[in-house]
Length: 288
Image (tube, rainbow, N blue to C red):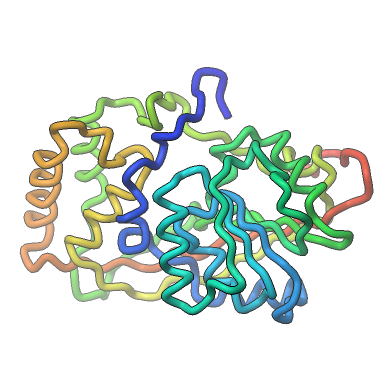
């Protein structure tokens, strides 16, 4: 991750209850795209590493005979288990509380491994190598994230945009100018360069797919508040005894932006990189 930051178990403490309501979903055609690209037919097995409350694994569950979600946060695993039970998926889903660095953890081998906006929190080099070894011959690793490069205007939609800059400034007022992450800070943010990490671990054949978003969403103030409290850098515990004061100020900012308490957003597109399990031994990094 970073020489000046170490993971600790408070990273997402208290966020799980807010995650499902507050986070925007992946683009709706994601499962269809992966089914086509990977030839998924309801068989095989999926391991979702850093699964959170099961958002990605449960979205893809119908494409596999078995899904396993791995996450170090107790609250996330509990939320994933509850949601799986509510969808009658308990029989095909397992939820394992463990860090990615603890793999393989006796979990066996898999057809597909996914990282849904989670890989940057891990000790990436050993995790990538271990996950490669956990894939069956012909298996694939899929790295999934929101497409960061697009602009999502709400022009023509019925409600104002979420006042993101004002919310960020409010978080900084309460928590300081440097991004918080668990008990530490991330002065330089989270790392990138996943392509080189996966290539060094022995993955090959990188394919990029963009699943279009842009669908109009209506969000309430409660949704936006949940979204803020779902983030590692504004997790509820970081505010300590000032949590209620922060939420009151946050709701004031939202009321000023939209007295109706309603906001318009557009769903982000989803960026997908598919890597195939290559032959034994590290591969050369892809050309930039």
